[in-house]
Amino acid sequence: MGRILGIIGGGQLGMMIAEAAKKMPKEISKVIVLDPTENCPASQAGAEQIVADFKDKSAILQLAKESDIITYEIESGDSEVLKSVQGIAEIEPSPETLYIIQDKFLQKSFLSDNNIPVPEFVKISSIMDLKEKLKDFGYPVLLKARRDAYDGRGNFKIDNEKQVQNAYEYFNGQNLMLEKFVPFRMEVSVIAARNTKGQIKTFPLVENIHEENILRETLAPARVSADISKKAEEIASKTMSVLKGAGVFGIEMFVTQENNILINEIAPRVHNSGHHTLQSSTTSQFEQHLRAILGLELGETKLEHPTVMYNILGPKSFEGRYKPIELSESHVYLKMYGKQISKPLRKLGHVNLVGNNGETLEKILEKLELIKKKISVQQG
Ligand code: AMP
Image (cartoon, rainbow, N blue to C red; front, side):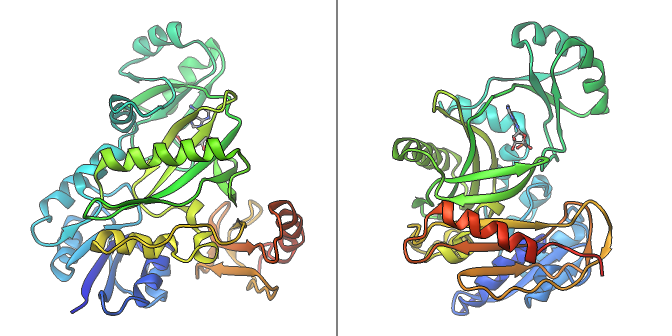
């Protein structure tokens, strides 16, 4: 008998998990998502929906009663509430793992206690404390909100003493940490999986290009030496072995000027930089996540073809309906998320450009320039 899967969050990640679940009818009989937006992307992919806030306790309890196993596509869930329903449904990754990850200071402390390399960081408890610690850290630094920050919205770069007061006030009393600014050579990530039995597998290292703190392009594989890839993948495996959570995790890292690897951040969920796996690998990150939480043997993670993923973001110039985006090019896979309304920098979809006949990443990037014109978002 298949199990009923509950997902907290029904955006594009929940949608692609639900689509992967449909291909495993023996293991998963039904998907229910909890999401505040009616007709959310995952419900368009056939999932049942409970319309409620992600943190609504009674809705989470209802989801637990109706599901056998619960997972999540967002990291801002209430780990205490999830803990309280653990006896009713299985929660994967576990609320204990989520608790560590969702607080950037706890996350970095945990990694550094386990000898996993991270940028230099420290907890900040007041403006006096900040000024004191800056004497050691120097400039530039990043002041970061410890919780509920994503896509860079919780960071303030401080370049000199004059900005300190402003930076502190920007956070309005939130819990903070300070981190040395890393003049990185490249941002990279590893999509890693650990199943409930402890088996661990990593997808190959990819390169991420951000614009305004939002992921714009992922290049698979990353344009680094085999040594660096190996080092990053080993660090990702070690992270998964100490974290002990089951599921797919997106592990974001910096390659420093000296070719060292530092972990920037872990997402306890499927990750935007893993979308290329939908076409570039035999197992997608979404199927891998389901295999991991169901305790199945993890799938093959080899990169079959070099691939570039490009995010389709809402333009800054308008908010509202947009013209349908269509594309019919060979080896180019368009995935729209069914969002009716475009907002500035909102993730509306993505394309994967898959190399064929030995095409190199450079060739694919040239092709992307032509494709970009065909998928630009127009008000309509
Ligand atoms: P975060 O939300 O903390 O993952 O940060 C968003 C983006 O800010 C990252 O993708 C990096 O481009 C940048 N960033 C974060 N931490 C640092 C750091 N310590 N040094 C340099 N850039 C950083």
